[in-house]
Length: 392
Image 1 (tube, helix red, strand yellow):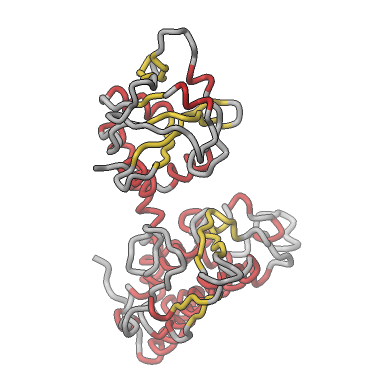
Image 2 (cartoon, helix red, strand yellow):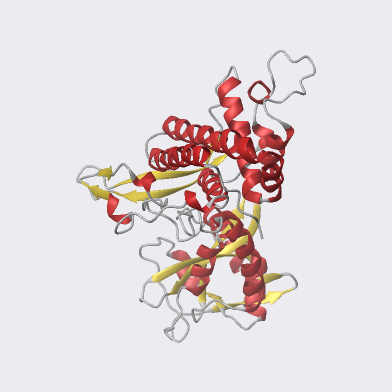
């Protein structure tokens, strides 16, 4: 168990102020993501400054080598070191690296306004280390081109805990690390929770200042179910990594919850066919879209699950009018063709010699194409929700 690293009174006060400044910067970044890329970049790099103050000017100055060992021994501590590289480069580099933040995903923020009904909130990640330009990370004028603008621990920390990760994850990791060193840095929750401090009306977002005085909880901006909002929560990206492994195990054994899936489209990655998509009937009675790779469909069929095609529906590919029937509700006049597993793939079991799967077209509809398949593979909670959709 990690030992506390309590601070003397004079250093504790500086730590409290610096931590408040860090939380204030994190809140500023959170709201800046719905403004513009420059605003998000300015707020994120400002937060790195505050991290560095707590790291070097407070805890390292007081606890020295014991603190450095603690920092190196914790993932969150290595993340703190990685953020130092950003702080140093932003301070000393002669260039602005405008691609330091990369949009990894975007979610809609409903505004309920007459003129604007929604805006997009990008979820930014830090650039991968290999994408940082030499003029940004190398010391100008160094003829060996080997001297980086931070100690080697910072470079290692960036590679291990910052590179490619969501910005908010790294900043919340830093706060969690410092709060875990001296429990006097912990403060109570905001009265009534932070949700009431965010108001959306007439196409505008209203925010309340001073939330950094309390335990940090990021206000709701159309958060995903697994999006991290508090320092004490486990890092969502590491949670998702573990969840991906769990999903892979479950999907090999458990079939989708709906009674059957009707196939409408093939999924292409460039010129390569990688899977299929279509609809099934959800509990609420609406058509729920699904997408799967061929290998998973193969496993489902081998586990007794039913995929089928209605050939007559392929001539009515207008997806607002398409004929849709489910297992147990098929009209007598509709011919259904079952998919069956063969080798490592799947085939349409039809005796007329037609290759119905080959006749399927790609879909341009969101939720049925390759782009959405990649999203589901990246976020296993959404993938499991899709597999459970249609559960009765």
